Length: 216
Image (tube, rainbow, N blue to C red; front, side, top):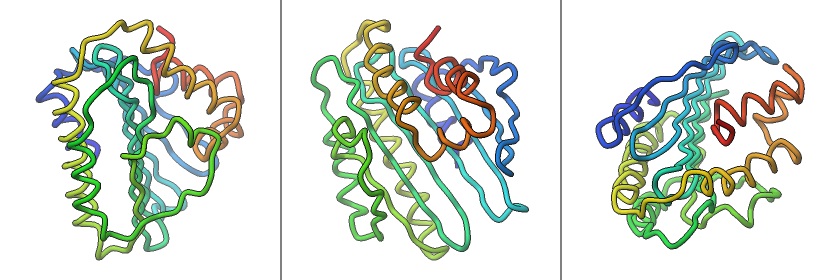
């Protein structure tokens, strides 16, 4: 799915792939990670992470957009296939400098409101997570609908980005850093896995320089 998503992004904001150095291939806690990163012309940083583990019984895809050229929220997509369950998570974080119209994303969320919700519980970042975020958890029977939702949600984000105001890249990175530094300090599912596997220093480098590109 992330390959389709990258093509969608590239059609609107041409992608240039950048080196991930030592982080391109990682094996952590029984999971094999493949990581790529891109610069999206006119938008900002895009990173993709694919993970497979437990003899192929668990697969996880992640796609992150850290907008630095358009005043849009930080965008995080996670998809997990494991134990017969299909989990779809879109989280948008408030890294806005001004106001941006997100009505298209709200419409997509409403369209798929009947799909089974996934309660993520309470987290330290809830106060900066936007209400337009969504999380769903179902079975194989829901996969086609989840795929459709994924593409429509991304398309709505990209459409909004086209209309969003241009902005100062340094100020946007500062706003994104609030979330990224919070992750490194307070933890999270993926953050904790990497901290345990490669240590805090390397995890910080991975998050700041590759996945979220808040340090250049």
